[in-house]
Length: 293
Length: 140
Ligand SMILES: [Zn+2]
Ligand SMILES: [Zn+2]
Image 1 (cartoon, protein in one colour):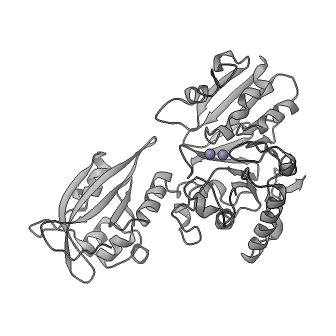
Image 2 (cartoon, protein in one colour):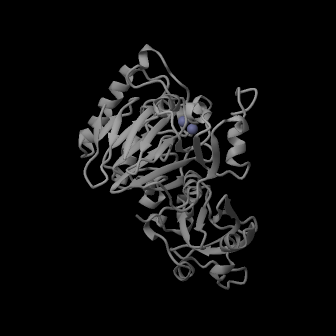
Image 3 (cartoon, chains in turn brown, purple):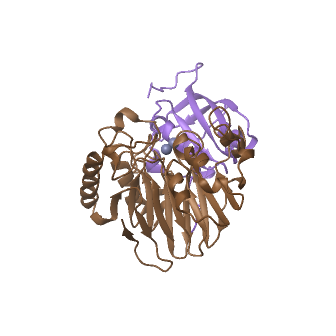
């Protein structure tokens, strides 16, 4: 499985000279499975560039949405493959008692917010609520689970061969909970991330910033590290950077995270910050993930 | 891999909320098994949840009662918490619980089910000091 980060920012795009290295696009991760099947995890503004990188030929794509906050769907109407009749797109996302996934997404892909309506998209698009049990896409087994954030929100786990990717970009598992003391089965998102080869996890706030953002649905650095340690993820990438964080601030946050991880007894190389266009190759047969930046 | 051990998010969030409350509160899963009670409940019972852990109906009854107004033990299945989770309806009762030091506390119990998009996931019960009799319950 190949994993490529197309958007690593949270909340709102943050382009500019101060965010050039970690990137300003909002959440989107491209995944190519061992059998060649293609997935996009979330459709923030990063999915625009993912779309431009795809060949203009008949394609079937699965977009797995964690939730419908704008930073996770904003790129949908600028996703080039959606405007090709030969493309088939399956959009997966959380169910809600209030309205179907299609109707909730149509609130954004409709006038006056959007120049096109869902029914006008030239591609063959369908919408599916994530099932409660595991399902298959191509060579992978997919699992979703509700996680602690604001509103119905999922995290995903993708198992392909011996490798596993856990994607939990918007997550506040430490809300009202002590992640170091709590039993495993009481930790939000635990089963998704357990022993994952690669964990992409919310690391929006520094520990100093978190007290002013309790209940906003995101993690402080130390929460993300505790979650990673408890779940036994082999390698953790802190994701969903705060739009206020410049490259310099993120460098400092990354250095601090590695130091703290070392103090917790971990290998400092197993923690890093998400940077746009970084790629990870997760071998189909058991071995550690290798990165090419 | 197995996912069977993970608690539903709604139970996790309920426990997080209950942990922050000063009112005694109890949580059962969708099978009616007591899976958590908070510190205030621990003070009332004389035993913290962390010491007791998850216990079955029999042990629960022998430890704490509860008892009806005539002093008879109330069957586990008739407790408001268990009624709420089984029937998917709120339940209310006045009862007496016995703490580990033998003292008895008259309480009013309100229980409500935790309904989610995936059906009922459990129930929460909150204890209030009974207005009728003194029971030694502090503000917690
Ligand atoms: Zn977000
Ligand atoms: Zn969000």
